[in-house]
Image (cartoon, rainbow, N blue to C red):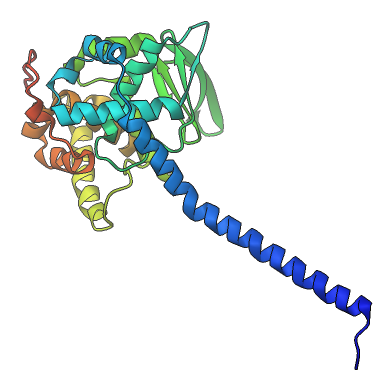
Length: 297
């Protein structure tokens, strides 16, 4: 039985549409597979670029710990800075003009947290808002049953779970100069970014192995509870008392202490130091940064 031209045309059209669908699916799959490879190649190309001597001078003059890193750590830090600066947008607030020097200093401190070579550059973060000094925000707090109070609070920095991070430039400068005081707004807020990478702020960053989470939870919970008890009893602590606020703040404060007061943290909280050493793949006690402050507990 002979088929009509209309039927043949319909079959050809249907076959052509099917082929188009498969081609589109193939292109999508190819894009999914190839795009990460292209991104990785671009990142590697950026990391291999010659690091501007002007940038290096900025870091040497503003980040005291920089010269105490090993040659390999400095080289890798420079590579991460170059990638970081291409991926993040800096926005000056309240009239502040964000200079190249400001960007380099912030990037240099933030990228210390990336020397564990996880291959991620704070993926949720898009914009870094920089204020000249402390900024004021309105927050609400429950002060009783059905009673909410609105307050104006001064802040030096904060990290959002979406795509923004806020810093006070005055505090950034103060923290880089006073490296050993255990307080660093850039380390603190970018540690929150690591914690928030899975969409939650619970004081637990994404660890290398599933088996690591149990040990992390045990060590960090015990240290968090100890810090809380010490603060209540008025005991001097290696970590800032703000770390007793909640587990997320504890991780951020512990990170500050790990980089700025590694000898004290290792002495008084060796298990916490070990967990952070394993996560950040760094051993700051080997940097031999001259100690000018003696901690007394």
